[in-house]
Amino acid sequence: MAKRKSVDGKLPRHENPIPNASRIGNIVMSSVIGGANPGTRDLPDTLEQQIANVFAHIRHDVEAAGASVDDIIKITFWVKDPTTGRAALNGEWVKMFPDAASRPARHTLTLPPGSRAQVQADFVAVIA
Figure 1 (cartoon, rainbow, N blue to C red):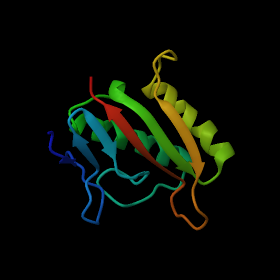
Figure 2: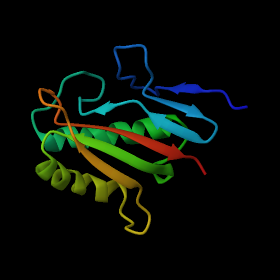
Figure 3: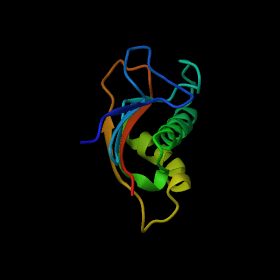
Figure 4: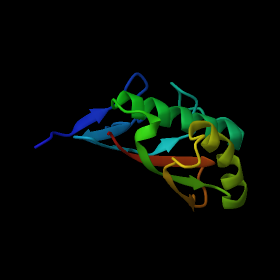
């Protein structure tokens, strides 16, 4: 039976004792991914920069697990404002997944009121 392995790579993000992601066999699941600047806990002011950071963290984490963005099967996003959030996500989404015939599933939900973050995400990857 495969053993679980914590995945942090060069940029662990959490102050609590949890990894960026976890891998068992060929399955990788991330912890929550926020839009903070890499290597800090500072949140940029703009939704667009937070989204760019989230996508950079996704790439870092999946690669640290020994996979690539092509192995991601689903990403869930939480945004403060679903209307502007979805539109802003689409630009980075198409950059990371340019082939319309080979994109992961995506679900976008609303962040709870009072959240400082404008966007958060998590992903599931299956390594081929």
